[in-house]
Length: 493
Ligand SMILES: Cc1cc2nc3c(=O)[nH]c(=O)nc-3n(C[C@H](O)[C@H](O)[C@H](O)COP(=O)(O)OP(=O)(O)OC[C@H]3O[C@@H](n4cnc5c(N)ncnc54)[C@H](O)[C@@H]3O)c2cc1C
Image: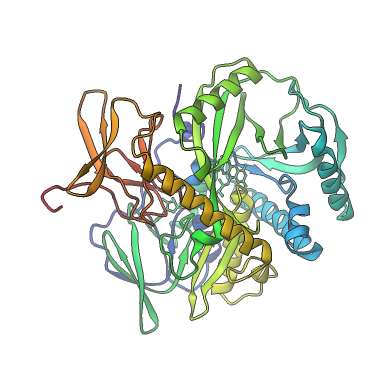
């Protein structure tokens, strides 16, 4: 069984970007993060007369984007009625237009650049397994039909998978996200310098230039585009109170189907997400708010069991992924600080970052190039509404609950004898004994906002149950928002 995504399996000879040792340079536009958002922003900026530089703390495309299910879809659960409720009909329609435009942008880029990334046009379903879900599906249908989108109604999916009711639409797609990103990387590298394994640590401003401190030196830039999934700084923006993290488990295996490929996603509190890739079925399930289920082992096991029960197959691939959700359900894209118009951010794609990351990239590029863009106001980070305020308070309660839970019970019952938390001179440390009996010790607090970490025995990582940062057994940052390691050097402690 593979513990990585199905896309990573197809990665051959990743072409290396520049690996300069000492990085003291000046640029016009610095993009931090080379996932779908950062790479696509670079693509839209590549022909500008600005000097553009992109850095990534790891390898391009290997963040959340390499673990996505990569559906290119405007049918996103019941988002349109939720946006009508949180905002109004106009906002909901504008979001729909943005999704359509993003799909159009991606498919046109793929055609223009002749990118081989298994782009497949297919039908997409949303469905419910519960009687109480029927009116919500009907409402979404009514909204979509009001925008001239034809929706068929169904009581079953094209494969054997019991549902109560659903709708189906056309003109949606699936693709291979890493092949797409790798191709974009190759195209932009002619014009844009990319540095991998360079981590942005801090951003300050001196006169008109931002100074970005990295692990390899300082970069000065007129513009900074923060496309690192979850911004590593608290101010400006204070993203942790405007967002929360959702985690989802994905399983894939070879599967014989007697129908054309399609995508399907449930609207119920229990998530079921289906797509196909070649002769594989990819199934996402067991989605939960990160703060709510910290027995990670149990979550993986449940998702694997669900897969076996539903498809009578052992999963060949099992992986986990997490995405940033905004409290009001709209992505957060644009100028984050009214005093610094050249500091831009893109986050909170609500598990729809293939489309939202692409439209975000277009918005960011248009802001920098001073081109008009009809979505700037829609996604602007400074927006306020009542749902957002209420959800922020609920979010703080969730963070407090998990903080208390992990403070009171430092060694939860699901830890086995090779993982435990110890206290030395008033500080807490996480200890993990590997397969060979070697001891690995790390700080037990996340450097981002000091939440207590929880061991993830499936992937052998220390995970932050508040904001999703992840570290390897020796403390190296695997996933942000944290950008400092939790390694221990007792000589300096
Ligand atoms: C289970 C799951 C399934 C999903 N399925 C879909 C789907 O079907 N369709 C869809 O549209 N969306 C889907 N999504 C959402 C989508 O995958 C994400 O929203 C999207 O990939 C986010 O892209 P990104 O570029 O913002 O982030 P990433 O891909 O994470 O890119 C950010 C990059 O920034 C780098 N970075 C981070 N911090 C720093 C730093 N301090 N310095 C330098 N570099 C840094 C990272 O290394 C990373 O490469 C799914 C999400 C999940 C969780």
